[in-house]
Image (cartoon, rainbow, N blue to C red; front, top):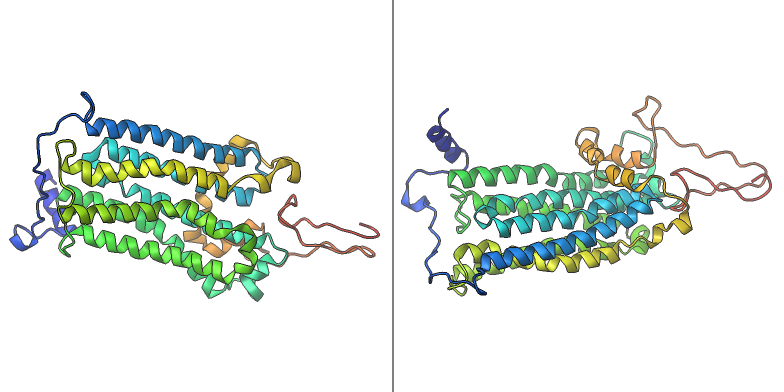
Length: 387
């Protein structure tokens, strides 16, 4: 198929409506004074790229500090694996924000990549919450009730997981749709008309993100008693607050530009205002969020002095954390198996579930369910004669 025909097909797929004047994307007002350097011979574009690059380096260094501290104190892998993943969220965001500043004309193509990082971080966070619940003596029963060792699982837990997991494929699809519609000329970022893809992508993204966030809040509400010691809301907003700030800034700038409160100047072009400024602000704010996340997910509870030697070396820990096949496999195996696998529960056929049997108590020995400081998910401590 030749290029012109491919272009026509793309327009049909992503909302093209021919040349009808009612369905024509309004051209942005890019008129403005002649651009002059901001400082000496440095334009605003160059200045913003330098600042965005410098602040991105600070963000990445702070995030790497979190990752390396947990990797070198990798004493509870099932929890710290998720923490390392969450710690990688901010570097992902700052890299995409920097690229949007450096390549303003391609900013709309680049920005949706942040949604994928958000989706993976939300899934990791929900799995971390499950692991916190599982660290309690009756954690499996708290999550699954009487259905721990059967194929059935609580409907609310399944719903919560699927509402969070759905955002992973949706974010990929929306990125593809955005890129394709931008190439076809049917995206129209400066219009909220239903004839253009922009409004549909915005609505779907907002709806799917909202479902994922509300599911996490619902999980927290149901399991509040078990999660209270872990300061979950602080941990959640340490990384999700970035997305809230980014959304508010983009929304306000969009309103100010459309109402002509903010207009191109002798230093700022239309692209500078629409793409460069919001992403520059985001890059400047991310170091503060990185410092916050370093505090919220501090390594103190996982100290080697308290829990003994790490289960893996630092490099192996990072490789394990960056392997997302466990979360992605939940689309095929189901999220409930993902949770049960965190406890090492295997079925009679290697797949179905079977109950765990505690080691017998000898004389006056009393089995005590494992805690987060034990060496494995089902270690038992014994006290008394014969212990």
